[in-house]
Amino acid sequence: DGQIGILNPAIITDTIEYINLPIENEWRVPNFIRLSPNGNWVAFSTGLDSDDSRTNRFTRLFNFVSGEVRDLEPGYTGDMEWSPDGSTLALSRRLEGSQTFDVFVYSIATESLLNITNDGLIRIAIAWSPDSTKLALSTNSCFDSENCVSQLEVLNMLDGTRQISIALSSFFPIGDQGCRLVWSPNSRYVAFIIGCNPSADVAEEIFLWDTSTSQLEQLTNFTTPAFEPGGNRLSAGGYELLWYDDNTLLISPFYPTAESQNVTEQTYAFTLDTRTLTLLFDRYVDAWVINSITQQIAINRSIPVDVYGNPIVESDDVDSGTVVFTLDSAQLESDQAVNLQYRLPNGCNFMWSPDGAMLAYLRSDYGCPHSFNGAGQLVLVDAATGNYQEMTLTRPDGTDPASVIPLGWVAR
Figure 1 (cartoon, rainbow, N blue to C red):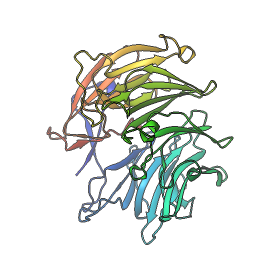
Figure 2 (figure 1 turned 90 degrees about the vertical axis):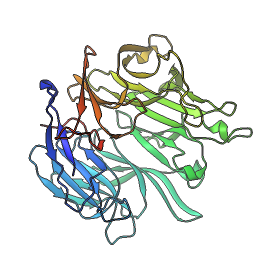
Figure 3 (figure 1 turned 135 degrees about the vertical axis):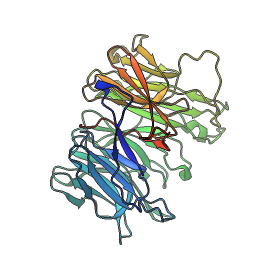
Figure 4 (figure 1 turned 45 degrees about the horizontal axis):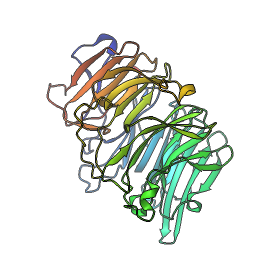
């Protein structure tokens, strides 16, 4: 069985309200779950306990306010994302009886499920524009060893047209793919990572796509040298992306170098109007989120590791851990660009409250996974002062949960 725990931070107590997750007796506990941005609905997919595969065959929607339950047509779900206004759920899925994947949109108002691609190509990533009018999709489908479709496209949800389509195979080796699509606040640019397919043997880098001009631009060149003559061909790095404003994209990479067994970890700001990449600090950020009201940024700076992922011990590493800071984008070249506000216990899965007054996250001393095995420590932070409280999350009977999956702020 599974429960959803709800806590009112305005009246902190050790008591958490629990709601039983509406699942059938023969279903597994869902591990693929999405909360709508308006906090009204949670969508989750799961399969049968008796299945050998881990495919998500059944998708259900549950309303936190009314308790209403809705079921979508059975099908295998690969990805799903809510529109920012919470009105529509986009899903990459294959309906039962079909052999192809397509992207569907489910409307909360009309309770309708519509196929918006209908071409059978697999979309590995879905991203809504902030104004909820466009869907960016990353496609990677191969019909045979020499016939692959790797492209980025934008679907205009207002008129149902495919607005832009770029064949990534024109820029990158066949078999590669784009992932981690992140829209700019003004719904014009899509930043994404190339090199997400480990079998393609391609360096990971960051690209920017201007959807108004169809211009594709490479922003980083960190892991590419590893694939050049003399390089170690290890691209086992990673990136985190965060838009600060319409003109500033924050990029945090870690990557091995050709000359060293250590991993280089840094965080940059890329400015669109000057096309410059400015170093902010020497650490990789493995989790961060911006407060849309106050522009405060909560981050977790990871512990440095070598090329094999082993921690590099430093005696007094004040640059690691969880902090909240503000950014002065007009002074990126100066020491005043990053203004540290306060330090917090290590953690991730940061979630600012809709009014910007509070930060909630889970404690973690070992990086930032999306779920936690064992008991979770919830941290609630006053955004203005940095004062915080910690709570231990347990099951209703007081025992440790098998895992904790943070959902977000709900409309209760």
